[in-house]
Amino acid sequence: MAVSQVAGVMSAAVGRTQAAAELRSYARMAGVALLVALASIVVLYGGSGAIAGTRPDNATTAAAVRAFYDHPALAWLFWQAMVNVVGLAFFALAFRRYLAGFATRPLARQLVDVGAALVLVEVSVAVVEFGLQLSLVRLAGLADGSLLGVFMASNWIDNGTMLWLEFAWLGTLSLAAWTSGALPRWLAGLGLIVALLLLVVAVPGLMLGYPVGASFAAYGPFMAWFLITGIYLTRGGRELGTAS
Image (tube, rainbow, N blue to C red; front, side, top):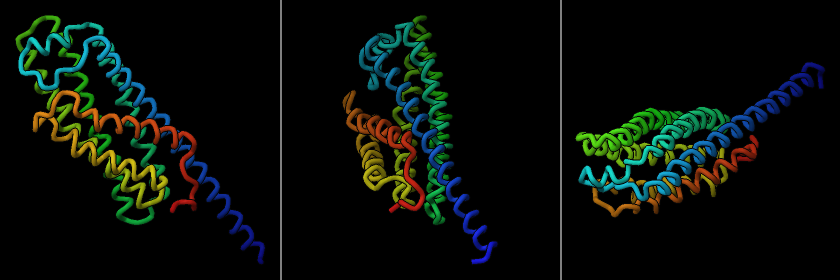
């Protein structure tokens, strides 16, 4: 073999090694960001439940809304929820770069881009939603007459449009991971199943008047997906060439 050929082979090997190292770094960044986002949302829901009880998603009176939100300590919980927003944005971009290393077909690449874009759209909506939640705490303290109207706007964003976005990005990214082999089939399949649960149980909940708490049948598995996927990615994800 000529010297130039040996050099070419060695250069290609070095390039593959560097590419694999970069993908591991992106996987770890995505995993850490996912776990940070999960921790923030657990603090939010666990803390608000301990302080004020179950959120009145089906409330139709200002008194019911005020009974939950008239706790100044809730403001700190909704304020720290911006950590969840930043974590999701960081996850979207890092996971996109990780998936892109495995997605070689046009459809898979399109799914990766659409899924990441949907996460970023949810991030934008969440900023508005958490701002409304902070407003509700303040309005409840003032016994303001607009409390019920602001709550309805917040509730339909949180349990209406945001649920569609969560179903869409989870399903799209999981399908991209399945088709590209970026995640093991069991983990990509778990994402698809959880996305289906969100679509069937959580998305129509407000429209169909499901009982308060019914959406936890989907949100529990959703949080489990955050945890399992986050831990898997922090370990470096899959090696290039091992996808199946």
